[in-house]
Image (cartoon, rainbow, N blue to C red; front, side, top):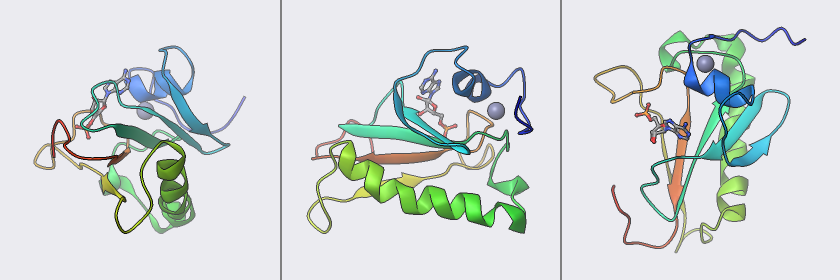
Length: 122
Ligand code: AMP
Ligand code: ZN
């Protein structure tokens, strides 16, 4: 039994718990990454903390190491998933926050989007 907080009504908490299927990209003790179900581009996966944090708005300084690990992991996973190397390739990171920010799922997540253009969106 871990001590990370979960929300029983949260779709991403259910994905992390394996209650809803997902195509896993990466997992460690604090981070889960999986393919977005409606990809914008040839590569589009989401990175989430296993802890239920609703959005960036709830972050505290204690979360800095976790967010730092997500940021530094993203380039490695992006290459593994088929993004071409910088500078010709690269990727986009998006973290929608709140309704004005376009956030639909209220469990903090980082979109990692890339691969050769054209993209379906963005
Ligand atoms: P946002 O608008 O930033 O909250 O983005 C939520 C993202 O979650 C969207 O890109 C959705 O396509 C994606 N999404 C929603 N449900 C699932 C699911 N069950 N598996 C994978 N991705 C999902
Ligand atoms: Zn959650």
